Amino acid sequence: MAPLRVFIEGTPLFRQRTGVGQYTKNLLEALFRLDEENHYTIFSFAFLGKGTDVRPIPESPRLSYRFIRYMHLKMFNAVVRKVTSPPIDVMLGSKPDLFLFPNFVRYPLPMGSRAVAIIYDLSFVLHPEHVARRNREFLTRYVPLTIEKSEHIVTISENSKREIIEFYGTDPDKISIVSPAIDHSFFYPRPVNEVDAVAAKYKITKPYILYAGTLEPRKNIRSILDAYAKLPAEVRETHSLVLAGGKGWLDQDIKNRLDELQHMDIITTGYVPDEDLPALYSGATVFVYPSLYEGYGMPPLEAMACNTPVIVANNSSLPEVVGDAGVLVDAYDVDSLVMYLEKVLGDPALAAELRRRGLERARTSNWDESARRLLAVINKYGAPQ
Image (cartoon, rainbow, N blue to C red; front, side, top):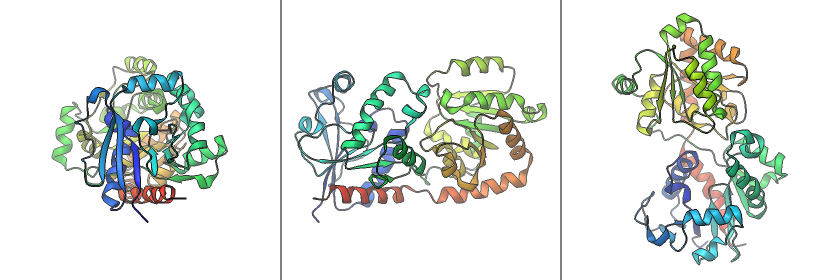
């Protein structure tokens, strides 16, 4: 079979990278290492050529970049939101074998190229209260069209696949799972000197319970705060609570609760750069993540890779992420969270067993395997029909 020409929407790579951007970059880097046949073009917007010197992934003989220079990304987004989605292949002047859209939405392709789109989760319809209105309206409008018009859909967990099937009536054979993975050259147990240096940076002076992620309602920060406040005084005297992450959407209730608990040893770090996360994970006595909904939920997997016991909510994709290597709790049951925190903090044998299982579980996660799954989809749906 002749090499395929694959165009990839690169917008998530050029923004400050959050979950979608990190997933896209890590997955594509692994894909380009793996695939020695096909040619890839990453396309994005660069009005009047501004920003075309940026290459989030270095060019190679099989990877090039294409920029739409005559329209600003903000203008394109405004047209998409308020009118309709412009034909992206016409704008690029190309008809490749396959388009890969890694951010929920497939744009029109009147020139006839096939398309694969990645849909991470259905939080915008299943938990609309946790999604900004403009984004919710955009996804509610375009995701059903994306599912209908794309040759194939990729999602990131069994739970997300099940939700897409149930909510949109999608044929299960039209959906493949390509999960996020761990970069084991980055997330691994860090030595004491690294842990101590990062702890000092954030003024952490005692053993600590850790949460890492955005401080927003969907992450159930309020329950973490309430559980910490309910822990016995002797536990709170010996353990800080560290909330590592930047402020998120609709965080006023979290701020109010933090104000009420300002007499307790609660440390909010603000945004934590990536390079500090492995040491923060490695130094924690326990990592807690009782999120109300996750398309996948990488922080618990990262914590396990850093040899930290994890407690997560028993909803959405989190049980399949941690398997039997973590403690599962009802996200809405604060007393249960208190009980399991006390158990893990007070039982060294249990904590050691969770660490062992967590490391073992994390080792099964790698980007090369995820890239192999994506490449199989690309080769199947990009091939001439």
